Image 1 (spheres, rainbow, N blue to C red):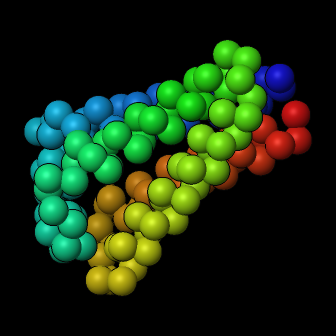
Image 2: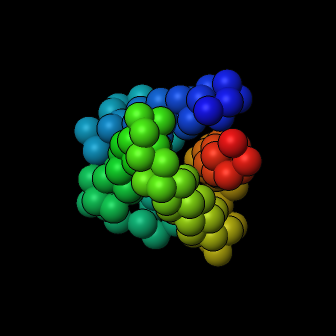
Length: 122
């Protein structure tokens, strides 16, 4: 395992774990930005637990398993997170929502792409 892969995977794990748990618990500082973005995009707030929060946490757990010695699960988790964030970006783009959550999704997508790329070349 390369240092770049480990560091990138750990950052991706931390970011998705925090984001997923914040969505699931409706953390107040996060909801100030996320609430209006959900309304604009037409996404029900009930989706914060499942699928939004659960998929992010599942992706983070899969990446962690990849670091702990189950490489195919880590690879699949990175690919799953890429798919998740591509869909999230599409959801924002279809309603022309360029709120801060749109740009956060770009950052999260970049982390997932970097994690998968570094995973495949290690």
